[in-house]
Image (cartoon, rainbow, N blue to C red; front, side, top):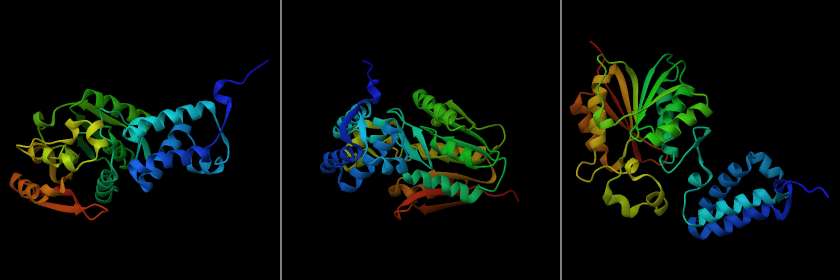
Length: 298
């Protein structure tokens, strides 16, 4: 007698049943709102179905194959592992990016940094953009996809992160020149060539670790999270020193920052030679970004 492939054998569990199981299991760990958001992302990526498909299939019985995959995902989530690492992808600026423990998980506020750049530069063609500490490549790729005819370069100190970024660029059909380099040892070009430099470098101080979520501390790469306790703005100072020599006159440096360091960073950027350094708020009204502009040629 012919039998169906394992992937087609139906279980006695509906999608609705499994969704409720996820939410019930995760709520004590994450809270109701976060449990629902994690469940939504996990089911969408594991099944490959859109939210419309999921709504339509709510009462359908899951295949044994899908049920097994979802149960394995839930087991890892119950141990505190971030859903983005469990399923291997994170949403960012309208697309899904592959992430691994070698890369930070893209945050919504970083997507806002992309929007700030697009608001300033979105109508300008042929921009030359440089992303420092690119991680998964999310900023560089989002800009390459949105800026008309832009030339985008990006670096990271981690070869593993660069591999992930290149994979993301290939999947999302974005042209970005990725390379492995240390932001503390960058040599400026012979003549200024960049219209935009952007960076979301490590900026958390070790003293703040006690206030962070365990899922971040236990799973995300510390080299991409933490600045040295002895010099919390070390990476920003290096980026600023490079940028004043690498940016064209009148061009801008865009930074995501630690709100506790905003005033110190503004003073440092002005001392380095920027004509202005404006602190901008994120959607939660937190001082999260700085846009620093070089003087225009007289």
